[in-house]
Length: 387
Length: 129
Image (cartoon, rainbow over the protein chains, first blue to last red):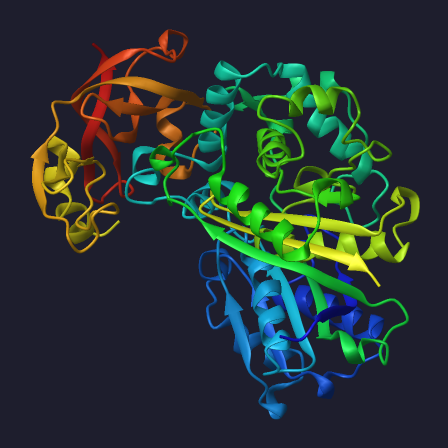
């Protein structure tokens, strides 16, 4: 297999983008990535697009072809494939693009992610997101996504020492980072009081424990490492790509508070890269809810179960802590256009490794991304390194 | 949810008819027709659960999808049935009375409906035992 590098990245601003359509979003992200890699569209061999639910969000399927068409590539007839794994669609699109390049089947490949979530009512959005869980046996009973993560939080807080304030600190920390990210949906710092005084969504989770509803798109371009320097002075090498599955329903998990798919994919990623936890300088984790970040830090093995709350309170995961987590602001503050999130995580790590992260720049040579579909039924993990 | 989609799961939704693998003895609810342990060597038969269990974790849903907004706030829980399997269901009780470890039993209740003129969905909820 060939070594693979990221040679270009692009991302729209994230937010409630009433003036931008689904097509506008992915064209903008794609153009930014091509410009970053000094490429023209004609050089692209294949496209992989992560998208969770355009069928329900904008009543449009056949996204692969649509994107190739509006990117002006229809006459080139390049293969364009939609990849879906709920909120892990973006990470999985990146993984598919890696396999295409590593195998030698394609040379220059675009991995993109896009979601347009604000064209339907909030109630419809809640229902659409619930389709990432088990519709027949969770959704039918009235389960919402915040509700499922709230049940993880209740189980966790019943068994481990995690205070409500520590949970809130996850959101406070991510808003601090988001305030230093020009693409973030929320660029305001908040306090623990902001979180604790926000309305309850699903006990014990409050509004500020939840990632928002977001429109946005991100795109990255991959090439074999051996030719990457033709396009950029700062190629970023893919050191590991791992994926794992688990039961679709939360109630069928071995342990409600442990995402076993994160544990497994994490082990595989470290093994592939030949690295240990100490070698990782930053992690973008899937904090769709604050409890999700707590579980991710532990399930990835950065600390033992029950310690992540204290670690967060102590500032270890803060921007200039020993293990910066979610320098982008995470899903919480940067926003969560579900299909685009996994690619935005790659975008953030690439910017950090290139030294282009502006006010939130940290010293980093290797970074990890952790993208979750549903309540943990799909997990995709990548490790990237500066060359 | 179409009429057929709801109708074909009526035994499971109304009466907690799940399955059991005779080969390994595992019980399944929600029902599985393929045993994850024995795979093709398994033998699956129907099994009616007694309908009693313990709350493993719960939440109070305060923001719901359009279909369930009328019912907020409602208690949603993961319940471990006494035979072993876990399921997700609502508990009919005041939110402040729900707790981890609570003993519950099944009751037949309205769950939701397909809009104002669509099929009414009945199924199983739980109450304090």
